[in-house]
View (cartoon, rainbow, N blue to C red):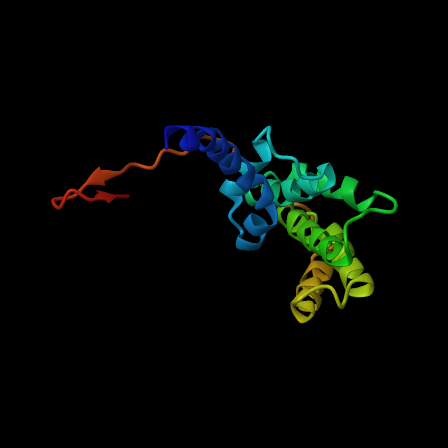
Length: 168
């Protein structure tokens, strides 16, 4: 019995390490970006480099690294004869809209929305939402990026009341 179990002790850890890489699409579908990040950093992950980059675009967006997400998505969208299918390309364009809206680049968000509407109308699940949202981006296209100007430090006094709660 000991001889039979001995080889399985080495196979089980190998199978356990292979699972995260095989689940990249599942993690994307579930929007489980923490597990996606872990799987992408696994050195044993043997997924295609293009698909790993595709997943990284979504991961960067989820962790509010919009500039990195934009740069990587732009590079993926500009690959001639890409192996990404139309649904994946449409998802990248949708993510570009989200990234540009979060970085206050509404004109670029509107341009990306136009690409989705013109090239990928059958590949998005929510075309009506894209069209409606794109109207907003077109309306905001000439609006400058939002900024905050703080000239001095502001100190807001707070104190505890009788119940021990903080009050401003």
